[in-house]
Amino acid sequence: MLLRQIFDPQLAQYAYLVGCQRTGEALLIDPERDIDRYQSLATENGLRITAVAETHIHADFVSGGREFAQDPDVRLYLSAEGGPDWLYQWPGQRPNTHFLEDGDHFMVGNIRIDAVHTPGHTPEHLSFLITDIGGGADRPIALATGDFVFVGDVGRPDLLESAAGVKGAMEPSARKLRESLRDRLLPFLDYLQILPAHGAGSACGKALGAVPTTTLGYERRFNAPLKLAMTDGEAFVKDILSGQPESPLYFATMKRVNRDGIAVTGGAPTPPHLEAAEFSRKAGDPAVRILDARGDREAFDLAHVTRAIHAPLHSPFFSTSAGSYLTENAPILLVLERPEDADLAARQLYRIGFDGIAGWITVEEAKAAGVLSERLDRMDFREFDPARALQQGEIIDVRTTGEYQRGHLDGARSFPYTRLKTRLADLPKDRRLFIHCGTGKRASLAASFLRSEGFDAVHIDGVCAECERIATAEGVTH
Image 1 (cartoon, rainbow, N blue to C red):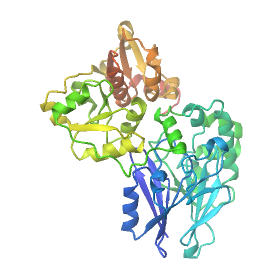
Image 2: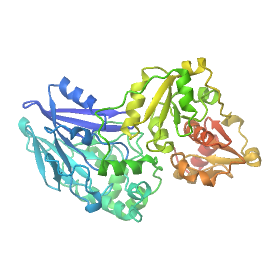
Image 3: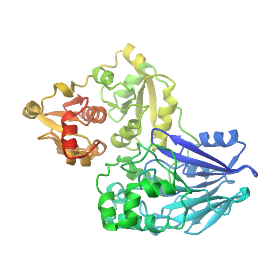
């Protein structure tokens, strides 16, 4: 048996290639939408992908299952659990689609895959037991847990309500998750490998570890929410529902398209490289959104294209910025540090459902053409006077609600940056808005978005020492 983990560092997402080397067949678990890289990996290892399985209807990326479904030789394995509201709609009557219930199994070459219903994160969620029958094993080597169990954390049960808008789902989901953690893992021995769908940096949990895989025995000993689920149900529910970060707004769209379907394109688009004059013409259209993908937020503040939003490409903030501030189907222009960034930017947008890239230009080209004409006022936290800021305008804290509740500047208002777009009506356009977070990174995204929407925003950059001091006094480290 061959097992390969495929990591997307921007979305902190793991897919898994599980291959039977004797027959050359392979299973792919939880692929993203740009499937060519998985096919290349399989070919490099002498395998062909004959089966694709999904642990659940994903909220943070567009599944690659629909792209794979165009190949009649690929079998799809999807969940039949969760009730009518959580049944996949897009496969229709496709003959090679198999809907799994708890206890069902299928074979990929000489490898047995068993479906285990593990609801809580979502009602339809499955985990997959992997047993290498061809290698002589009669017990599973690993459990692909999706968003059920992570390294150091468990899946968050609040997204149905907080992201997908299913009212009243949060607490029942937390209780169902507790039951799954307590009961579903009980039969398995400590050596069982845990293959999670996400790692540190994902918005699908609040304390995910940066180690790529783990074992059930290790998690039983050191995974705090898992341990709590085993011993105290009420305490678990309270803990798992507190402090979860606000998810980006695009999560609700992902739930819909992964259940109902999205256009099949055959791969990520190749965005056109524009001449400066054409870029400027397109940028003048108010319907077009502009993402500046530079990593240097100070350079962005000093000079950028009018209405551009800061979205550093080589970080998780690119997808978060796009997914929180762009509108579905909006045309997008990109300002890139280098030409070779075009493919990665297109893929990252494609992975979260944004296909309409109208073109790109490099920073140097934009600078030479004189289109970096806008400036975002900025101030270092060491020079920031909150009392004076409140006389001039308002202090806007764009950290998560949990961070704000643990400690914040006097007079500051809480507007988590991933949900800012939904609360623009609550902000005044006739006063200065001083935008801060904990380090300046999230504030950069938020301030640039507010500036693009016509607000008088100031980016407060650097570490918020006062926020850290308050949190430390309360015994919180963040």
